[in-house]
Image (cartoon, rainbow, N blue to C red; front, top):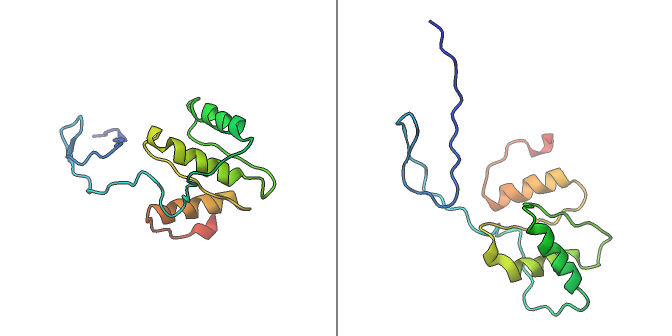
Length: 131
């Protein structure tokens, strides 16, 4: 007799710490692990900085992130305030987001992203160099 393999997946968001009962009456008991709102080791939020002439850039960041974007990439030459701008924005608007993070990337974006996320979330990585 043949049976078709059916993939099943459950997406869990937020702080769902109760058992989950699936459509086929199986019970999933997830570990009680709360993901921090901020990726703590990667975010150095700027507090109370007086920006001069950056109001338009802050509005642009806000508009871009409010267009259902989950990621904002800023690039440009070093020292013009990209990191400080985003850090300030996150500090001012952090209550509007369930989770947020700021990762500063130099050359290898893939390696920096994976390393930053795995470090922040305390994930064990086996072969990051193979990326």
